[in-house]
Amino acid sequence: MALLGLILPLTINLMISTTTAMKANAGNGGYFRIVTGTTDGTYFPIGALIASAISNPPGSRDCADGGSCGVPGLIAVGQASKGSVENVRLIAQGAVESGLSQADIAYMAFHGLGRFRGGAPYDGLRVIATLYPELVQLVVRKYSGIYALEDLRGKRVSLGAVGSGTALDAEVIMAAHGLGLSDYRAVHFDLGDSADRLRLGKVDAFFNIAGTPVPALEDLAEQSNITLLPIHGPATDELRKKFPFFVPTILPAGVYRNVGEIKTLSVGAQWLVSTRLDEAKVYEMTRALWHPSTRRVLDNGHPVGRQIQLQSALDGLAIPLHDGARRYYKEIGALP
Image 1 (cartoon, helix red, strand yellow):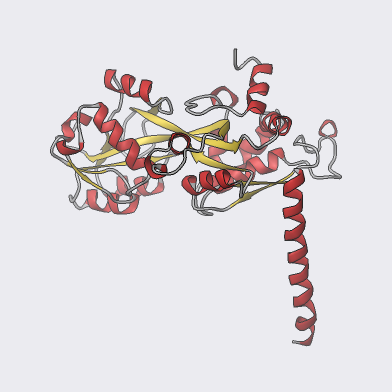
Image 2: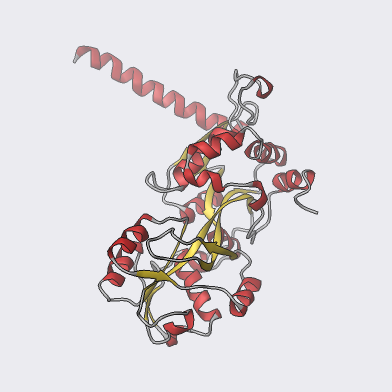
């Protein structure tokens, strides 16, 4: 106990000193935060991988010698958060340097829509890259007589939690196919409740937007005979003209038990910053993200990491690129 009494104050002092140093470094560019999501989600490990790729702490071996190929002197960390909406707000407030977000949430924040309605639009938000697709998954029971989105007229449809990006997207997708809120019974449940209610026959369909496979949908497919409705065709094409963050996507057969290939839409999981960040610094971070050595980090760090590819980095952009990222993509010929 006496020894603990000596160690504990030293530990607390070290933690305070470290935190103070990190805050000081945040001002001069040495320390860089990427807010992600909950620790049991996908954003958290992906944010950690990106942080690893762009970091190059003082004293590291040179890239040419097999060391880090990140930004010289940069110490980046992934930081847990509540997800896209909180991340965008933290970036807007200048509380963090960057964060991960769904493209639709970024779009809403930029234009002051949805959960951001009533506040000043955050038009200082910028994109570094689209990382991977999060699919729009419209789930129904097989043999329910519902084969197309238009068949949901008069049905009970869970659009997602109130105020969520999923709920806004679901509403505009339904409207694009001729179904206003008076044409079906809209209810608002999160993924877990929606899946339970579909299994029990208390809703006829529900929306979910996420990277695949979604564990809750895998479980539901094991317990019940489900399928996903296709979202494509002329109505979808018109929708994409209005909301460019939607991207045509195919869910391969076999992702969920007894569910075949489905044509649908996706929104990108994006890495966001603000216009406050220096152009040269963002250029170096973008270069580090797509450096050939980063491929090994992404491919081996997480299954979703393999989906982070340069050829899809500019998919579904609905808000501007940061000038530093734009400069990099122009240099490599990805932009005119």
